[in-house]
Image (cartoon, rainbow, N blue to C red; front, side, top):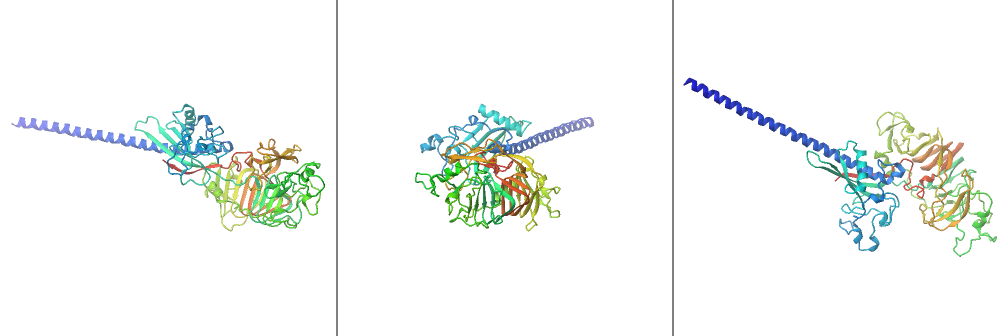
Length: 582
């Protein structure tokens, strides 16, 4: 009896051990399975996050194709032939539905993007449907898809540049018209889809969308923009373009000898023409039997600066006002009262006074926002209150001089200062780009560099319209009279459209302290010697050339007819707005 009971107990213990072992094994297996699933889920989340970031980076990289010639791009833009442009849908009323381009009700709308050829991401950006992105998300204007052999190479190159390990691939890039809510200046909406090929834990896919927005740098063909008064003393002046001064111009009661002569002007944005009154014969205001412009062109010598002119909202101190609002303070010789012979070397009828002020914020908010975006080539710096004149990048880090913050290759530097701070003492050192200054500033030059500055594309007649010249406008025939760009021979006006003018050979400028843009929100004092090639903007200006020349020179590289997207060297032409996941 006892032996049987012990055997039963031994068997029960064995069964218990087996059951416990099975339970422990089951728990271990479940734990292992749970760990594997959690690890797979974690890897999937990491992969999804990486795909999302890759998609966002690809949107920025694709948007950079719009500014590649000016600022470069991570990978070269694809040519037109590698873009699928057959999918465009038109949605003029914005309701999300519309016909394909080839079924548009109006035959004039049955065109693809860049119908007839052209660079896919370059101006013109409108108004023709051929030149604008107007498609929809489901009917994009341009598409790169991996199924297309031509597009696949571009997508793979961009994938490798953004993800060298090759874990993710860019499957699709679509470009279409601005979607509702896009800010003004949006060129296109860019949508990118990223995938992970054959992941062991299931499909990974991410998409992002952003708006490629053009940065408006204003009238870069203007050399000087002052929203108040401007004073010039000593050897100080401008050349190569138009100066706009909303207030009074003070030049000490006399025309500075260093100011160049230009071509004759009849009024704002209206150069004098041979037959200005349109009666079919050349104008002869002084009744000497010879057409006024013909007599001027026939004079010996060369024109120092065909592009020189100015627009003054107030008066010109010490110089009598012209006859009527916005008229030459010193009329063209044959049109003066009494008439006088024309002058090729000192023709200054292009300086107009009493003009309606042009609204021009010296430091527009849109430029501040570009600097604060943190995009490539844009730097925001905050002045150290304990060490005036020194700035910290984004308000952190060691305080340094502004010259240490402007990127060597050019860009945008915003110098933020406390309200009411004393004028900033700023030394230019031959850099490139845009310097934006809060408050007042006194600017000198510690280092000058020789720069080859292109002349403007041409002098064009905009017919009284306040805008940059276009290729369709009539153009004045110009040719350099000397290799040093010190004078120009002037021929007759040529009917548009015309090719770009004499911009083949840049003009040497040995005394450039900044090539680009200097914009000061308050009063700006320029103390010579100082040279700036590009544009100067300020609320008020004092150009002091008593100790050395103050030379402001227009940069022909900012002319829209010379470069597709004008702006300061290295500064963003396009930024991405509303970047979001899909």
